[in-house]
Length: 246
Image (cartoon, rainbow, N blue to C red; front, side):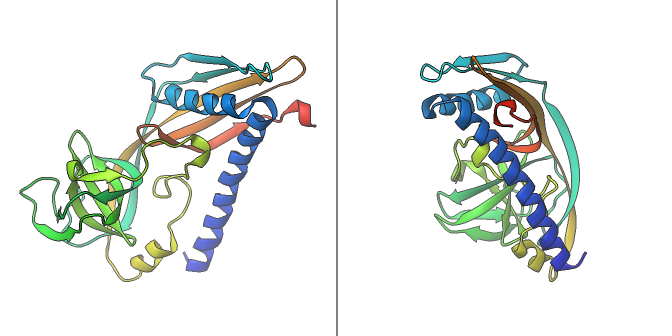
């Protein structure tokens, strides 16, 4: 696909996500005070992180609006993508996609395999930022990406996420596993580096919500997908129109 077309489609999809965020944000602004809005968004994360589908409720003491949040069971999705990679990196491991920036807490070896037996391919300097593309399942190893290229694996005990918790309105989709397309840096890297097939999984779940006061009500359904603990993004929203605003 020509680069210009890739960038046009990426821009369109980003605008679609931004519109979805705006719809939910406007609904919350209409029904809830700032404090209750924050509580609602925190409850959303608690619901998404819960092991079982359940129901969360709340009431705004200022606007007297009430809300209900329900979640469906988690769904694991498998996806295969092509990505520029250093030749020596072994990608054939069980991966869970992350898409979160990290920084190194020490000078940290980048290895060809997720383990101390892997060859050293480079070093991250203390404080250096990298992109955690994925986590190796049931291990403390992260798959490192920098400037659109997979560099290798680092031990997560010596790195720290730049993002601890973020509400769903502030989190961008994972461009690797969602319909959003690669960044310009990745496109440029792809033109000069060999690509490898990267197989991995990520989890999503559907969430329903209702907001109502004495005069109006609205509801919506969205699909949220997980990057890491308490970091979820809106993937496929289906938000109903707010009858109070038509």
